[in-house]
Length: 318
Image (cartoon, rainbow, N blue to C red; front, side, top):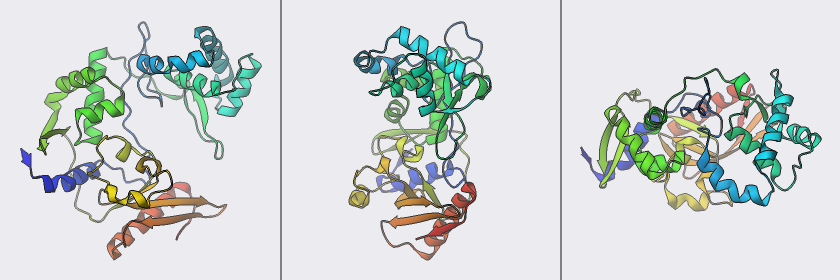
C-alpha cells in the first residue's frame, strides 16, 4: 500500500508510539537472541548485544594491538574477573580495575575499557545493580537465566523479527545500523522473517513492522522523558519521522540529538530536559522547542511524576 508522503511523519510516529512502555523512561528493552559458541548448553544475551561478536572484535583488533592486549591477556583477565565476581558479587569498574592490577594486568591508557568490553563480548560479565550512582558488573551466568541456544539462521530470523516488532516501521538499512549485521545478513534475516512482517511503501522506500503489533487507544497527548541514546531515537538511521532537524540549534553544545535527553510528545521530539538529583527531590528542567499547549503541559507533568515515582523522589519542574 502506498502512503502519501505528507502522512509519513504521522504514520511513523503513531506506529512507534504504540510500542513505547508506560514507564517514566524506556527501561524495558527487547533483547536480541544470542547464540553460544559450539558445545555450550546455555548462553545468554549481554549488554553488548549478541555474542560472540567477531565483527566487533575484528574492528577493535587495531586498538587491541596498540594496547598490547592479546589472547593470553584476555584469558588471564577473564579468570581474574570470574574469581572476583563469583558467588553473586557485584563490583564497579574501578573495583574490577584494582582486581586486574592485583593479577598483574595493567589497566591504564584505556586498557580497562577494552578489557571489560571484551569480557562482555565473551559473555563473562553483564550489568549488575547500581551501588549509589555507580554502575556495577556481575557474572552473566549467575545473573541472567539460561536461554535456549539457537542455530545461526534461527537467531538471525529471531533478531530481525524482534527488531521490527519493537521498532517498526523501519527498514533493512536501519537494521544494519542498529545490529551491526552485514547488509547480506540483514537481507537474509528479512527474507526469513517476511511472513511475520507487514510492509508499507513511503516515498519509494519499503518499511516493515510486525503483523502482531498491538493497537493503542487514542490518548493524545502522551509525553515521555527519554534519556540520551534511547532506542526510540538511536534505533534508526533516518530520524526525520520523530525529529525536525530545524531544531538542531536548540540542542546542547554537542549538537547531536542522540546525546540529548529528549522530551517526546505524541511520538515527536518536542524538546530536551535535564535533571538534578538532590537528597530529597529531583529537579527537572525542561527546554521545549516551542510553547506547550495546556494539554501538552499536563502530559509532561504526568511523565515527570512517573519519573519521580521510579526514583522514589518528589519532582520539581522548572
